[in-house]
Image 1 (cartoon, one colour):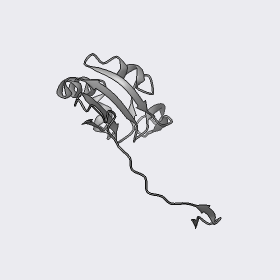
Image 2: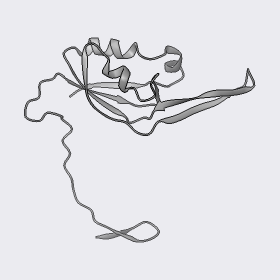
Image 3: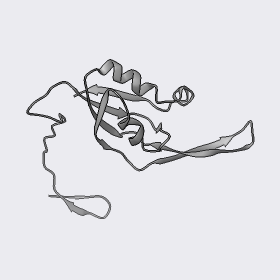
Image 4: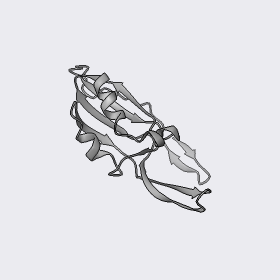
Length: 128
């Protein structure tokens, strides 16, 4: 037991072991984790409809945060840019499929290259 924060609230500390593999008993190597490192734009806002429609992969589950509104001001046009909803960084989607290389191509085709050049849509596809 210890006290945390300025209010001195009581807290307990314990060690927890996390297993990040989805299928511990039968690791097949056919499961993939898609992790977004930056805000990512999808037409639907949350990416579920786009990612569940991929041909080579089956969407198993997703852990998505609250959508981030992203906008700004266009100095050349002297007007505000339209607000867009982005999937927040840290969102994770779990897939099952056979070919990681084909999955990378299919997923990268979903994103606008102009957004990617501005630093959005940075993702990592990891074999579980």
